Length: 226
Image 1: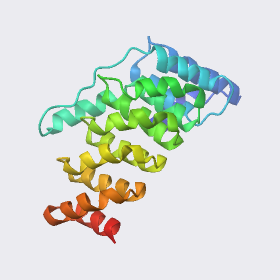
Image 2: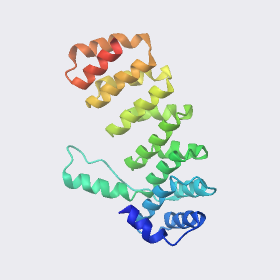
Image 3: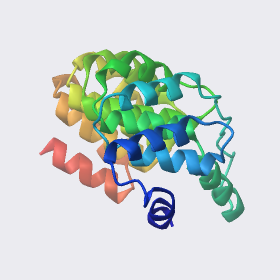
Image 4: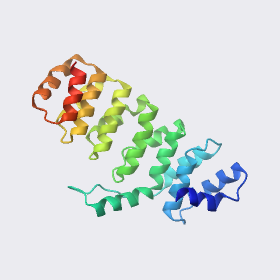
């Protein structure tokens, strides 16, 4: 669908500069349908041209935030579709992702703020994905705080980011995730502790091995303790 859309809207724009300018206008125009704007932002993620980073940064900074909250308890098919609908139209979140793909380090302070947006978990997720990919030390305090994020995917991503940075100051907060209710988080916490390599983690890992029933976590424990 997106390819067909760009064929219709951009087919007559032979000059790549014209295409970029048109995409920027689409992305920035709040009078347009949010899905069209988000599609334009995603297309700009692959455009390394002058002005694109500045334009996407303005969008991320000034775009009204969406309130995308996680449903409590098990999600129904209707709730999942509602979440996906909102995510597809979250212009700010897609701008955060595009800036990450463009290696727009000038947007680092802004992404550090959006990575902790209290109301839009998708904006947090996309911002943190960009920062983890950059592997910047400035993100370390934020990643430690996000180890307690209500979204499982963000907790896992924060653990991966901490592992990449390799800062042992995170050992105690990561150890706390060994008791996380989600086994995927526990498994990533084990893997992260293995990367951090602090000798004091062996005893709690061995204690977890004695009581852990999830196969994925047990596999992670065997790999680290061996």
